[in-house]
Image 1 (spheres, rainbow, N blue to C red):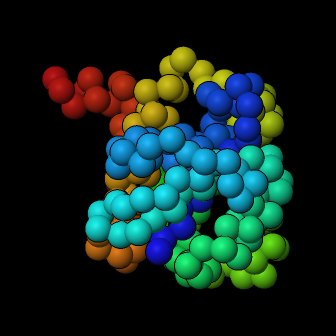
Image 2 (cartoon, rainbow, N blue to C red; image 1 turned 180 degrees about the vertical axis):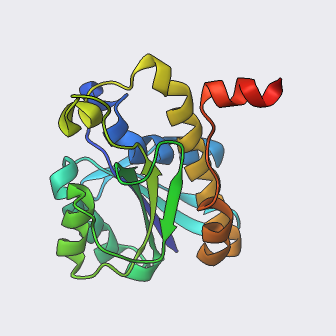
Image 3 (cartoon, one colour; image 1 turned 30 degrees about the vertical axis):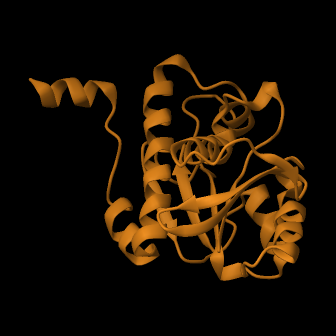
Length: 200
């Protein structure tokens, strides 16, 4: 089975932040495939069901970001899934806004949630979907950029990028990660101004 893991922080204060992109992707994936109500399991919220013809588990660790690996390792201890069946979805400042970066494996890139998973599993050999949130503009620091609510002018593009990550998950399940990489690593969600210009 596949284990889809979305990274974020629990609680209402974090719900609408860029740092909870992985949580949002899990919620939308579960809704899209009618997986029902999640159970409290594996130190998080967990759905299990079928999607794109595959048996899937969807996990939102509720350990807070820095301890996400505890939840993932707990899930792998009991589920019929191996490390190479895991797909982790998370926000990434090194990926431009409106873009995805899908990889079969790699380092943690300084992302604390991913770092925790790598440390707990003792391996980085799992797939990941990086949802691009870009670097903060002007004098805004990285913490404020990630943990404050998404700014009004950025909400549409961010939401569309999360939706694209959900589509990419479906592509991975249906046709494999190589095709998903080829199809989605080159795509980008246009800015509102760019859309208006294209429509003229």
